[in-house]
Length: 112
Length: 105
Image (cartoon, rainbow over all chains, first blue to last red; front, side):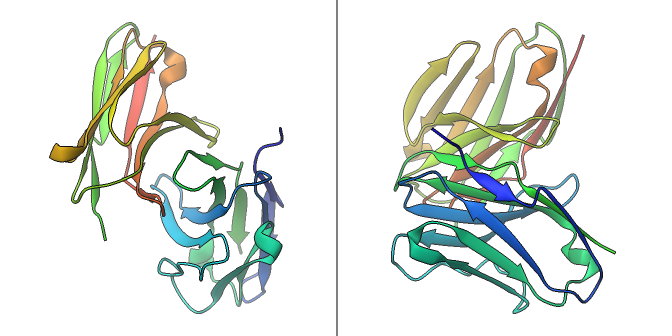
């Protein structure tokens, strides 16, 4: 079946603008994760959704970042008033509970 | 939260050599995965291994949950093994900083 998909694959935006990044998880996966990876760095956890439970937002770096997951499926990560330090690859992953996590190809965000 | 440490941070091998990558974690875990991030940035599942030993071709992994570590073994390394290897633990998948492997022909 289809894997995790993310859109757009690349996004260039001006400082101060808002951006929305989309993640389509694997069908039936109850868990969805967002990470950020800056150039040459490891993965920084942002947020975790599990079923209908309240999301774990502990990794969001500031209140400019928010995410939602509609109908237990598609998720949108929104960054308001983007800053240059927000430039990174944003990765989404999904999994069934307690089993393997599968990653999408990522969205490369560049803030100019 | 749980701390995840990986070693070594960087590793350079000659093609055909074997290697062992280590992942230490600060508390008991119920989930642990190893990933390979290829030079194009794609993260690929290698093993889901909260405990025990698994093998897949030239790769194998062992997790000793009671001693809070996991090992990834790469045998007869190939240039295509180059990239960064990450371990991640628990349901919310906290990642280590990774081991950057370079295999030279």
